[in-house]
Image (cartoon, rainbow, N blue to C red; front, side):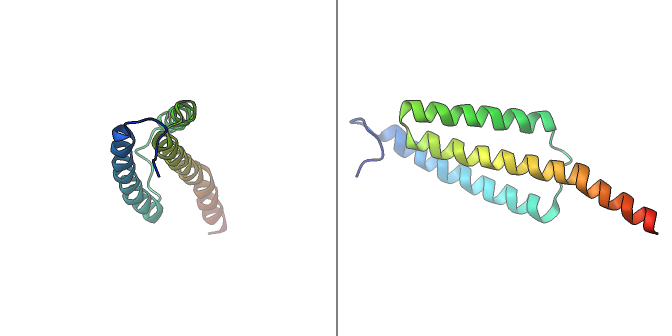
Length: 105
């Protein structure tokens, strides 16, 4: 079974290797970020632009009928969305909880 719809699928196989490396990177990054919840070095604008650009690349993969582009960009869109969630959580929820603890003390 071929991973693409054209005669030469070398580009899709290279893409699959790229996906594997990309997934490994995200697993390492997310493990660290989940353990520390430290996203203070990330710009909210960069995260939002990352979500938008990765989502647009995912749409490009759908139009090109390229499973490797769709999978990779779908995963990275979810990854950037996860970073946004952590950023918002640490920015707003943790501050609120910290302020409530100070008021109680």
